[in-house]
Image (cartoon, rainbow over all chains, first blue to last red; front, side):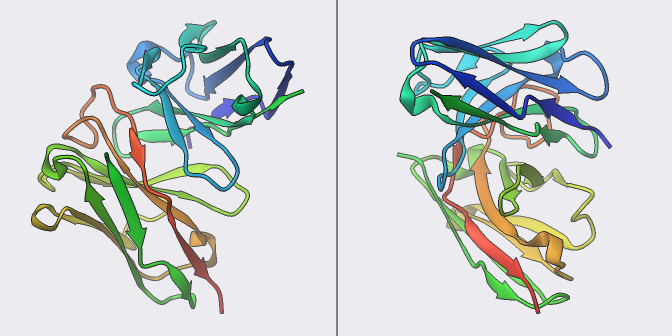
Length: 111
Length: 125
């Protein structure tokens, strides 16, 4: 069973920068996994932020950016705002019978 | 404005069935694949099932294969999930989500671009 692992929690100061990562149990994450990133605040549905590694949706704030870093997918938040406090999930595409696997999630605290 | 509104959740006994619906508006429904994603209380997200624009391609997570059936009615702009033989571990908030691709599993770029607010399914005796 494929497992996609994220940091359980990260803390960042307002105005600071934080990088979340997303690792696959099958090996290095490449662009062929079309990494996605979602933000979920308590009591709300997830909101799409990034797709295909680094593409932003029209509503994605400029301070969010996606990349590949050291064999993992990465989401960087630059100039963090208090409203960025949330759970963040990555999603990788594997194709085949189980094409989509979400990461374990990272809780980002802005303190 | 894209809107996805799920309904049909509730409390159901183990072994029974439930049918979820997702009413879509604000976009050309039959241009896009659709998915169901669930989230158990206090847990992470789990992809459940996906269906292509014309129902020609369908997929399920191993955890629900053989028990759940996804379908869509493009004339009614609606997505469905028939859930049979429900188990306690199926207890979750079920979201429908719109893809950016017409095929649910194409080998190309996918994203769950828009999400509904979810409908809660509780399986308990």
